[in-house]
Structure formats: C-alpha cells, structure tokens
Length: 190
Image 1 (cartoon, rainbow, N blue to C red):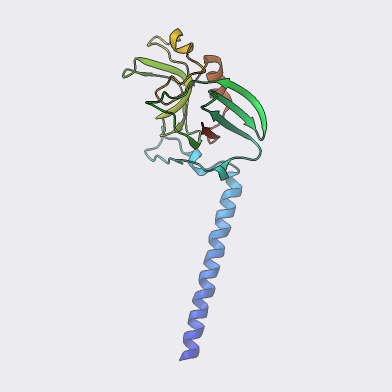
Image 2 (image 1 turned 90 degrees about the horizontal axis):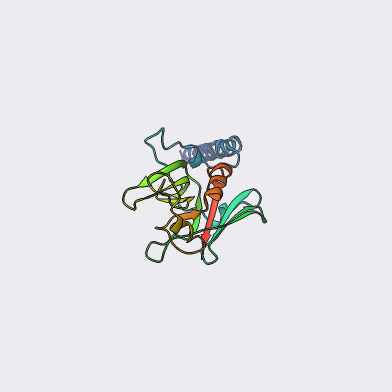
C-alpha cells in the first residue's frame, strides 16, 4: 500500500511539473508572437467594453533600445529618446501646483485628433493618453471651441500651466501624435 501511495504522489508531482512546463512554453510562445508590444496595448478601447489599463509601468519596462519619452517637469521639457540618443526635445507646460501632472512611468494608451472640455472652456488637438484612458494626456496648447490656439495659453509654454496634462506647441503635438506608437513608455519626473 505504501508503495502505491508513493507512486501516486510521484505521478502527481511529475504531472504537475509537466503542466508547469506546458504553461511556460505557452507563455514564451505568446511573448515571441507578440514581439515587444505589451498585450494591454492591443486592446482597442473604442471597440470593446473591456478596459485594460496597464497602470503604472516600472523602471524595468524602460527600453534599452527603441523609443521612450523623458518628461522633466523641473525643466519643462519632453524629450523623445531612442535608447540613450535624443531624437527630439520640446518645451512643455505640465500641471500647475493645484492640478499636478503625476510623476511615474507610464505607457501611451490611445489617441485622438481633437477634444473640447466645456468644463474648462478649452480644447486641444493631437492628444495622446498616458494614464486613465483619457484622464491624463499629452496634447497641443489649448484651443477655443472653434479650434483656434488661445495665444495667452501658448505663451505659457515652458511654465506649469495645465490642469494635469502635458501641453506642447501645435507642431510638436502633431509630430508626437503621428510619430509615437501606442505602448511607448513615458517616464515623468521632477
């Protein structure tokens, strides 16, 4: 009887190990098929009720090669990097002290060409979301309801002036919108 129990326990252990090997193989195959993109970036929030929010990424997610974004709130700059090489540096306006831009490591989630907030009486062009599926954005300087740039707001570039989003000059916002793919890592710091 003891021998039978030992064989049964041994078979269960080997079966569990085999099952674990199968799961690891499936995970590796999935990672190879998906390439370097995270699964969460493949969800189209407009086409699905399922909202997968990757939340905060970690420093381990920072690519050693490839495109990533450095946002320095103390210098009021957004720098597009390829590995350790500067691709483009732009002046920004991040959040005011009462409505700060969050620090952390995030991923580009989704994007759009225009929005208008009746709450703030302002809109913007070329928005790219990095937190909360539209709560925090990189976008152009504010525009009025007709889509015209508000000159007084444009003059604030280089200073903390937003409600928490990251503002760029119109031409920089368009470039960012067109050039930066979903899933790109943004590191925001003071």
